Length: 276
Image (cartoon, rainbow, N blue to C red):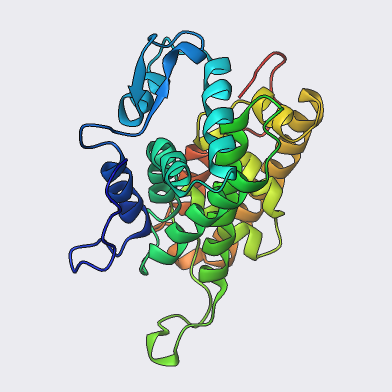
């Protein structure tokens, strides 16, 4: 049994994801690190596997997705039995995904990102306690919940009024060139719904395919493909309007065009068989 981390120590990280990383480290150190029995799962070594090693095994290229579901079902079941160590374990196993996601959401966010990163973690924990573990695609649904929570926090932060002394614009500036912020501003402007922005963000900017997204949201592939194409056309039209409304800066600030390119938007429909 690992020693409980001293969260009151002055060296304890103030960043929520770093604090989670520290706590996970406590569970995986010492002579008896928190482990799973690999004999209970397909394609894993037939021995006790410490959780830090387990995380590396799950991320290896040869690990089938069905093993992810088996392992995550076990971890979530243990967490729901009110075993705090396994809740920390779940967060630790998800940290590569959560850290990358949080960094992407706030890459061009000028303010302190910790509140947004905390919401990413909160969204993940809420899903950990509530998602249906009998369905496939557990990791994808956990990721979507975390991303969605962080996205809402980002939109709220962008939309929040700033103190008068911090105002430097007579009108709102063009969206930042980072695609996540472009999508967040499009939601704030009413151009996209949050679901549409998340669909574009996850299937264009991350490694979620349309097929995976459709399955996680109980939609057909064709319906999801049409929804994304329609939302992308609205986004392109809005970005074009931003250029027209700010002609003096359009030459110096190619944000709309860069954002469209980085989001891989196309003016025509997706080609048949395309899954991203």
